[in-house]
Image (cartoon, rainbow, N blue to C red; front, top):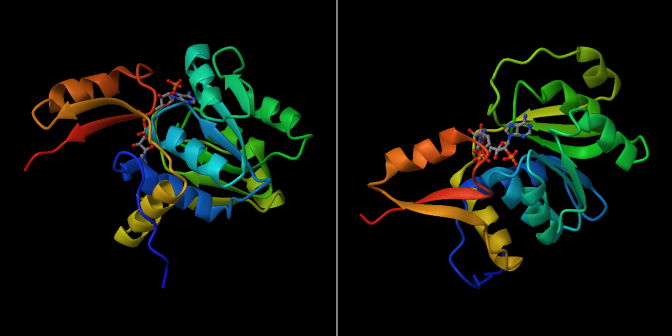
Length: 210
Ligand SMILES: NC(=O)c1ccc[n+]([C@@H]2O[C@H](COP(=O)([O-])OP(=O)(O)OC[C@H]3O[C@@H](n4cnc5c(N)ncnc54)[C@H](OP(=O)(O)O)[C@@H]3O)[C@@H](O)[C@H]2O)c1
């Protein structure tokens, strides 16, 4: 039986949080773990907040220095602009003394998957969830085999996962980063915002009033 942990501040928005929570659990992330996040969208930023609360070191990539500065303000330890440094996987290896990361949250998909495999430490986890750049990737199986990697898929999560994520968000007093809140009647604007790509930082959200 878990202790009840009251929420502080605004109510948590655990949609991306469930996925972020499952990612950290899949790799048993704790103090000293190294976590790599691709881009500064909703899943990456909530994973950043939860990973820092768990004591992990976070390396985050973005196309924008301004967004990287915002990620740093949220606790990110290392920042990589993936436009200026397209071989960001080599930078991850450099930052980790050649070891690689314990967890890579693969939000970007086709364009980054092979580099994520390269950036993973032996025994590390590539949490395959996203396809922002496409869903069909070609990859060399040898690093997966030789490093004994865990490539773990995820489809958001269960109600129980969502409850655990909400409890963790409340306990760590995390205030999720919401870029824009749309009403339920603004779906077209909301999806156009998301489809434009790269304009937002954190979550785009709907406010529902049924
Ligand atoms: N399977 C699941 O359980 C699950 C759950 C939730 C979401 N998803 C999927 O996960 C993906 C991310 O979701 P989201 O809500 O976080 O999306 P989002 O808010 O739209 O964020 C997408 C971010 O991807 C980054 N990006 C684009 N091209 C990139 C590249 N080449 N390398 C690195 N980053 C790149 C951009 O970051 P910058 O602007 O900083 O460059 C962009 O902000 C989506 O495909 C979504 O459908 C899956």
